[in-house]
Image 1 (cartoon, rainbow, N blue to C red):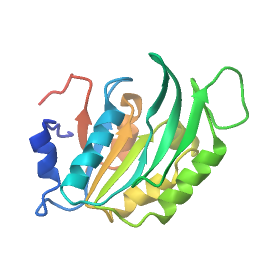
Image 2: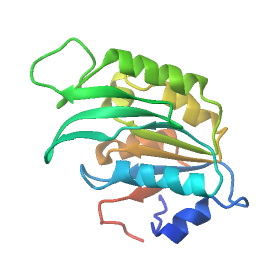
Image 3: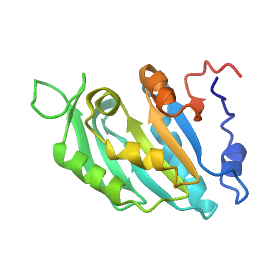
Image 4: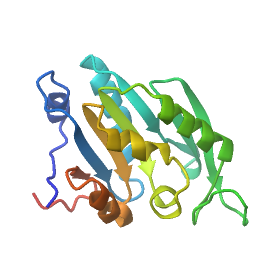
Length: 184
């Protein structure tokens, strides 16, 4: 059974202390809008304050007013930000999900970035979704990076519907559930 963690700033800072155990993988899950990406951004800042190196990808929303109209792909540690996904308004031959059409060039650049990434103290992958788990598409280079366990800590965002698949691949992972339904 996965373990659940309190997410206070003090608890987050403890994760980055020099004597922390090696190769801790946290699967971050929760419904849309629950703050998964904001938490990844916060973790990157906490790690930086603690002197830890970070790497990976964060996928912040592109908003128009209160409506999400796209998704960017920030290559960590701050190399560049790419346009990753757009609202899907018609069928498109590119990789896509129910709601989003993916930019193939951004996916290729994201995969190249992950493939050449020197192992950081904190690896952040926001997110692995149906493209990766079900279609063998998307940011698939993340799988080899996570599997290598060359980092000290990894935080991987996985939507609730794919949590079982992620735990089947990484049964040693700990789960951080932002749904508010944690059973401690």
